[in-house]
Amino acid sequence: MNHELNPYVYDKYKGFLTWFGDLYFATKPPLCSAKQIEEMLEVIQPADVVCRGYNYYLDGHFIPGDYSHSGIVVNKREMIHSIAEGVGSVHPIDFVKDVDRFIVLRAKYSPDLLLSRQMEIVDRAIWHADCNNTEYDFMFSEDGKYYCHEFTADCLACGEIIISKTVKKFGVWPFAFERELYLAQNLIDRLLVVYEFNPRKSS
Image 1 (cartoon, rainbow, N blue to C red):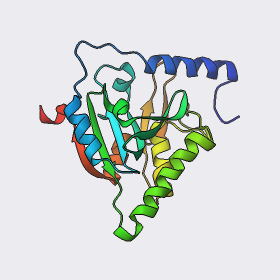
Image 2 (image 1 turned 90 degrees about the horizontal axis):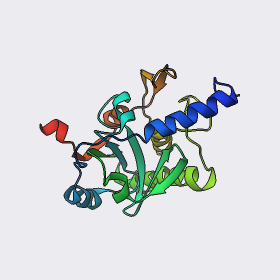
Image 3 (image 1 turned 60 degrees about the vertical axis):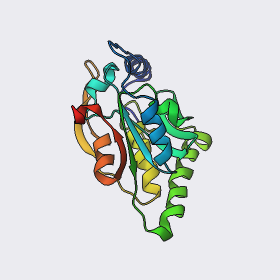
Image 4 (image 1 turned 180 degrees about the vertical axis):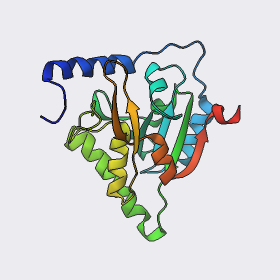
C-alpha cells in the first residue's frame, strides 16, 4: 500500500480535502479581468507554466506563497493540470478567469533545443491526461499519483528542467503532516517570469 492510511480513512480524507478545496467565501469579485486574460493569451507558448492564486478559496490560506495551483500550457486553447478529480485539460481562459492573481513562467532553452524540449514537456502532460489517467496525490507522497505542482515538475523534468522541493507542514487538523513538497515558489525560482498579474505586489 503506497499511502499511510487504511482504505476507509484514506477515502474519507480524500473526500474531505476535495470538499475543503472547493470552499469559497468571497466578499468581492475576482480581481482578474478581460485585460489580463487577453495579455496572457498573447504571451503563452507551449510548455509554459501558469500558476494561479485566490483570495477567497479557503485552502489557499494553508498553502504557502501567492500561488496555490499550476498547470502546463499545451497551446493557446488548452492547458493540462492535476486537480482532485485527476489530471485533465482546461482552456487557459477558464484556468485564470476567476482568479485574483496569476503568473506565466517559461523554461529558457537555446534556439536549437527550444521546439524539441517544448514538445517533450507537452507530450508528458498529454500522457498524464490521456494515456495514464493520472490520479491526484492527496497524501503528497504516493507513487504514480501527482498533486498539481508535482505534475508540473514531472512534465518539466522531461524537458530537462529539474525543480527543487521545500519542506513544509501541510494540511489541516486532523490531517496535518510534514512533507518535502513542490511549491509554486520552487517553479518561480527555476523558470523565467514572462507575465505576472499580482495586485498584492503593487499595493
